[in-house]
Length: 292
Image (cartoon, rainbow, N blue to C red; front, side, top):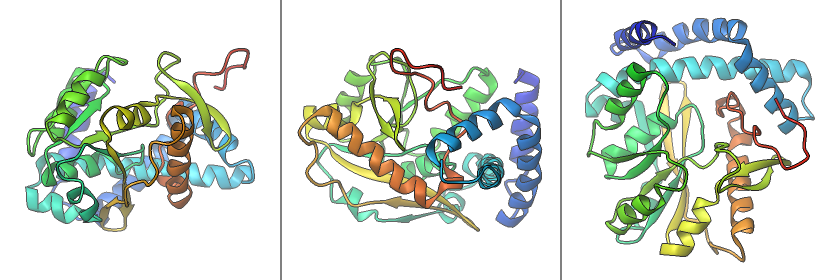
């Protein structure tokens, strides 16, 4: 995306700030259908992921799910207008919260808010910042205008600590922030390459996964709370689940497998809201053919 196109896209998104959720959803349906037809590389990645993770589905079912996902992605992008321009009250109306007691109960103790890649991820992340000041790691975007806008939006409330992803280099900074009492809003389900990753199953497919959750829990005794933001007809619901019991377990590998199983439970609940557009299986075990 060029700088000019990015700025035009940001301007288009911003114009919908005063629209109703239904109006944004109608426009998102048109945009999502167009993206499904035109953005062929991401459509291929989506279908490859769905074939691997849902072999029991027919191809027609996978395509229907993928099309719904692209509509949901488009709607989540348009909803950034409220996240970027809306008042605190508007953001609170857009993103309701359930289970906040699980966050408050962990006061004065290190806390990991585990936030998998669902379409409501940014909405949930910003809503967390209206509740507590936290720390998170972000991936720098290749387009400078888009990157600057996303960062400005994420910093609107409570001045969160946002660390650019640098492999394992940010672990010390995360530990320092957590020691200071900041919950860690962590996105655990990206393929960041073979360095520092281990292979554990995700829907039965070996997936390169950073075992940071297990390592942090072993280093500082952090509680782990799943923090999933579900897109609803009129907005979002940020759900904090009860902290995991018996964690960490016997080994880093077992802990990381458990993490993926917990993510799978939510994916099965919200299959057309999980970001299948990411190359989750890009890194393969030695001797295994490329996935994409």
